[in-house]
Image (tube, rainbow, N blue to C red; front, side, top):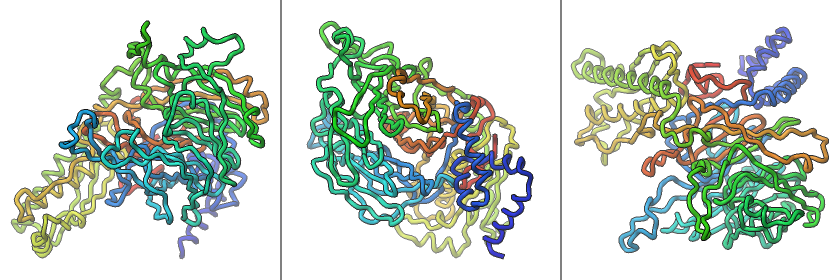
Length: 639
């Protein structure tokens, strides 16, 4: 019997169940999983349509989001650490694509503080690789595409029809790559077709060269705002660029010709009663959201002397003449509370002691939506806890750490005894596998030990090469049956545990098999500190409610009110230069540099944020389950 026959048989069994049971089963599926199910079995169209309506109806009620940590497979050819990359959701494939970015390595000393003749500056590497995240399995895979663009970072990536459009970004020049004034900004536009797996360059006329900008697509128009160009000035931050993706022609719209370069609190005393104030949005830390065709929202971080504003922009997609564009300032409260810098009487800027300084680092904003609600999602610190260095949920992280350390100590003793027993002939050398079980965690090590013939081959290798490490495979499973009840291990915990076990086995091989003293260089642990040392993100959301046919939303919308959510156990550590994408009713975060210290430069994992109707509990929470993610290492399932 074929696999297809098995699937058809399972489907027939499903059809025989009562409808209430079918709805109950489908209620456990994510929206993207329902879409895949419907494509595979069109016969379920009616019941799936009911579930889609339920998801849309419950969108407003599910105000909280739960963090799900996703660990990559142990693949030496996997995605390298990166920051400042760009990602986009491609709906036909239910997948997210990621392009480019920048490595985390580089000099920590500014060029001005270095002797040029003695400088040992190592520039950050830029990438031009393309990766695909399957949103059902939550697995990354590399896409070997043809005709790919040059390496770059801080570019924009948007979906247009059946293609993905990549625009702008910068390429660091050798030796001075950390100095953005010494980088090469890009103006080229490329389009990638996932069906043909080919890139093509879109010929354009007199386009701007921007990096760190934000872009959206409305019809055949790519609308661009912000970013750093070759001559970026504050007055240019009231300009929007529009590219017609069909004919490749650029145009620009100046929303406000002479904006006052003063904070809103100062500027409103200088303006006439009918004179508008254009907010001082930050060039590379503001974001543009398409509320619907013809209506844009510009929000995010502002310049260091301003705060508390957003810009609403209305336009006619069929007529892009500047006279048809109009805008207004609206309040944005609850996310950024006060300016980072305040002027003195002589005009000198000083740090504002009452400002939550760290939040400006976490400026990314994305949108998820239902039929009648658009929800903005952003990361940051809560106002009352921005100064706290230690993470919350300390006991839970400690319990998890103790459980892993106890298992590693037990595994070390177990593996060492195995080597001794084989040397003394108590165990046949042909038994190269071993199983380690402790406190609900089970580990299977295949080819952990070598036969004498394999030892001779291994010790004969030159330059410290060790094929025995490649031969060993590690399989881990975890159950909730532990004396540490709050320390359920998720995929990332098991991934870290496998990393430590892998390094331990290499050290044992170096000790027992290698003829080279010391056994050569050993791999470094990816996470050399305790999880409790990392501050965790809080989540901010802001809802915009509207009717699909509502025509006067521009007049009605006058405020964006951000609301913070409690810091969760296993939330992402504070990270900069990460990529954030909204997908239906979910959010995906990936990469970036974890905020800990300059030498660590650790990349964050991939995180999936899913909706929930209640605040996730502060105890007993495991943010991923084997039913949600398909990994080699399985973890315990929790609600």
